[in-house]
Image 1 (cartoon, rainbow, N blue to C red):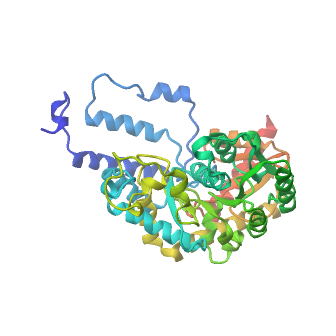
Image 2 (cartoon, protein in one colour):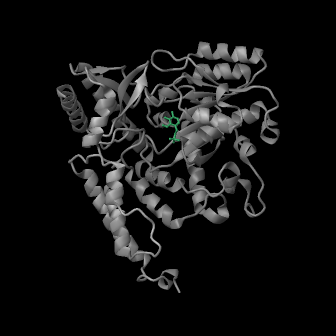
Amino acid sequence: MPFSAMLNYPPFTMQSLLKDTFELAEKLLQLEQSSEPIPRQSPEELAEKLVLSLPHDGVPQAEVFSRLEAILQATPKTSSTRFLNQLFGGRQNYAAAADMITSLLNVSMYTYKAAGAQVLVEQQLVHHMAGFAGFSNAEGIICPGGSMANFIGMMMGRDRANPNFKEHGSDGRTHTFYVSAQSHYSVDKAAAMLGVGRQNVRKIKCDYYGRMSVDDLSLVIGNDISNGCVPCAVIATCGTTVLGAFDPLRQMADVCRKHNIWLHADGAFGGAALLHKQHRELLDGVEHTDSITWDAHKVMGVPLTCSMLLCKHQGKLSKSVQQDAEYLFQADNEELNPGLRSIQCGRRNDALKLWAAWQALGDNGWHQRLDKLFSLAKFSADYIEQSPDFELCQRPDYLTVCFNAKDADPVQLCDLLHASGEAIIGHANVRGEKVIRLVLVNPDLDTSDLLLLFENIVATRARLISV
Ligand SMILES: Cc1ncc(COP(=O)(O)O)c(C=O)c1O
């Protein structure tokens, strides 16, 4: 007897649930496409409006879906053209469709025995993406986010610098990491989790445009070595979170080679530039790095989360993370058991959605996606530069455009735009000043959407000035 028939509400079939699910999905799409802004609702308003508490007895299907719909209505629409806030937004439709199938399949990506063809799907992605990075014999693993991929890259560096660390912990010497002052905070968190310590992450100076100074890197490493420290890894940021700056990989690789230090490229944001035939130059020298983080859930529009960690050296990844478990790894060779290359045990299948998107787009389609995004960034920067209402921080190298509306506080502007629902957009610090950061990762945006944004900012500034 199906379990549902034993409960005290009418039995349901998966087919009828799917029908309701698709109806709900249809409503979401309509909401996203509406041109009307959706004002922000406070958590207090939502708590009053939504049924959030968990019932003692289950409720009927229609009631479950009505509660789901209310929650869906009240959730930010990250695929709308008004969402310009973080480094993700918009939706790669094939990936989203495959992700729904993924939930139904519900495999765990640790063994071929449990995941079958899905393991081969992930292997294809590793192989193909490694090719874009110029790695010929790589291994890799899809991680739940760039922070986790950075952690693994840094761990491999630590384990190469001090092969005993993994088994015995620190031997009393100071272990160090090197990263630009504009780097993502995940590096500090990883240093803490790796037992190296946040205080031992050296923040290397950047030039005016946010790129790491290689002279400073050399100097700091030299000093540390003279003082008996153990440099574990240099982490290059390829596409910084705010300015979208790319550290000079080729020169950094020279420094790392000289001192035999692991070079990890944090391309969580900027790795996708490798898909563009010309702009891949932003990562010039990438083939000289040892490992790379490359998020598909940012610029490539794949549903969260989907982050590729690539390692150039076959065997190093498994060496750092492998742990025997007789109860799990019982069949097939190492290659077919990705659990040996993962720090997770149970692991969601984040491969199928990326693979499906790649089937639909091909390498050329990704190039075109990137091309559209670069053109949106250029359009925005040109517009801002020419407008008397705005000030551009700097010409963008990549897909973030930092600017200000003259005579207006960017924090207040962003808050008001959010409250009215006209735009969800954020602010950041650049060279000690607050600025608005426009993120262009949704290729469904058109120049008309950007003009509407600029118009809304000017109108909001007028409201601010009048109070
Ligand atoms: C440069 C950079 N690295 C790493 C990350 C972390 O990625 P995730 O959010 O996938 O953990 C981000 C996130 O914005 C980032 O901008």
